[in-house]
Length: 478
Image 1 (spheres, rainbow, N blue to C red):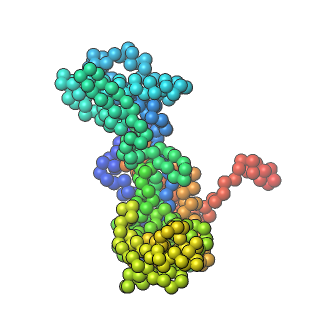
Image 2: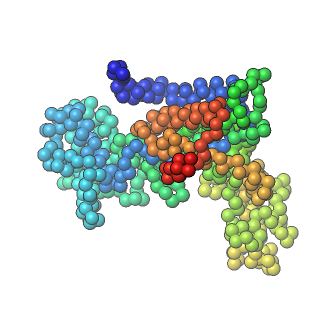
Image 3: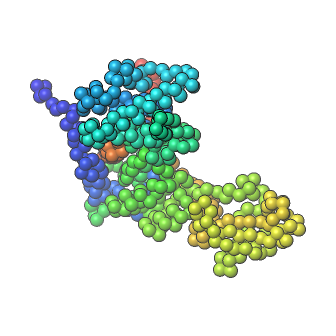
């Protein structure tokens, strides 16, 4: 009890050293290696992956608040680093009143015109400070301060300035003139956080992609190399997290399909079947993952979006027969196409097929085939390998047996819930992508240990939360 313990900064420095040496995933690698030696995780089985949002450890700020808080943070940094220089470079008394309190501690004007004027005042003050920092008589090291660099980037992204001999005019950028979300800073304190949008909901921060084993209970090996798994453990081995990937909020799931497989390959834990939702999949990715990693993606693909398919009436793409060798398509009434041309549609390779208008115009079922009043039917196909994979996947996902198999993916939702409820994964504890990923790795290790403890000690994981009222009722009954 007399031990003074250690300062909290020791843990902060420990995390910093891990990040600086690229050892964020070391603890998860060591755990998975030990589990692999005992047959608890393996390559060639089944795994599932899904993502969820992570809120950055900073406040959500609108554009007005972001400008004011960025300028305030820069002034705070300069007041600590070079107080004497700052006192002679800016009107300290006036600016202390304007930028002293944090922006979120007071309410902005209700009038739109006054808010716009305030934003322009912030813009002019920010440019004035940047000019002072970059002046020839200013210490050169000031412009290298991270806060000054952030201010410069933020002002480039949010303001225009036109300099003439008479004056300098400052304007805010219109929404259409802002940089892409992947480049746009969302906070002066966490420069890796980004604005994310998913299913109509916005957040500021990151995304995490969690992969876990999901082999059938009767498919688990009872022993590996003659060595029993754990002599005291009963029941099938637990589902264990095999990979954690953290990105900023703008990275789509499809962009992470290949990186996740690279991470699993590096640990020699590539599955034979990988269960994913449609956000991770495309015909090209299904082909590439099978070709490059030997992994079959079990995932729904987007259905045909033609007017006929959406309406569920008429002749959609499936009603046409494709002869790839002859480069010709036959319609449901037996007429053949007259145009087959490779093209690029929205940056993607495609094949455009057309039927002659003279053939389609007198057709008695024309209204079920095309909405064109004068032209013939047109089809757009992907290259042969991709189109055949797409057609096969669309056919399979209408089968009840495939749907029952795909139900395996749903279990990852429980893992995400457990990660959020037990480790607080929904909110980042630290600033920056690297330390946030380190936090996620530690969380994954903690979840694996919780599951292993439950399995080793023969007690099931708590799957429901009992309310305090229910606990009181049970105690009174007892």
